[in-house]
Amino acid sequence: STTESPVAVETLDDVPEHVLRGLPEDVRLFPSAVDKTRLGVWATKSILKGKKFGPFVGDKKKRSQV
Image (cartoon, rainbow, N blue to C red):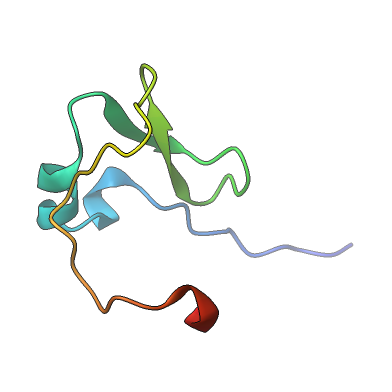
């Protein structure tokens, strides 16, 4: 019999306040469809192409660096 250790699940309490403040009105954080232990970004209605939101925090990278 193998005993698996519990997997930590990311919650809204783990998300920095500045991230929550930067989410557009029609974007929410819910469990990811890809990794159930993480939160994913979900749109509650269509987002127009080119729509910008933020604030951006971090280092900008060129496409070739990602």
